[in-house]
Length: 237
Image (cartoon, rainbow, N blue to C red; front, side, top):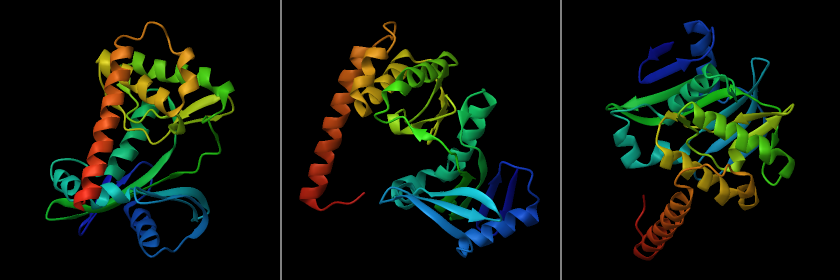
């Protein structure tokens, strides 16, 4: 369900009436909530655990993607990052995978472009899999099961896998359908980059894995070169 109000568009992932939805949006805009914990706060995103209407929620603001001019321009033709986050949660859930439980997302448009957006989802009591060797087998298995359905995680670094009661949860995912063996292999390469000692658990049947690792290394070199050029020339994104 999508509600519209002025330059706002609100995507709801629950049985909220329009009036209830507008009330929640106003409370978030006015910061009329209790801050429980700052989970992340840097130039790329701000993630806060909040108490709102007696609910334990997470408020995520994708700062970088809200502000970059080129990404703003592209939103004339596509959804905001917040909308994609909420729809990704819904998509993974419909496929039977564990993920965060989305509540609602809000985007603000001017001249057709998204100038700001945020998403609310329920706080998940879970542990990180980063550097937690006993969880690695489950992480690799979960990613493999996702790929069997021809779906990519979209950001398969180890920090985006959590474990709760023995089950793996996908978080911060940007899932998309893909039958590309190379794209799937690249997700393993990215996972290995974020957690090198997980690689021995990868299936030996991954097609194009060595190529994906080489491409990943090349991508990192290009990214470092771009950052160096921007630093020298003083260019900004």
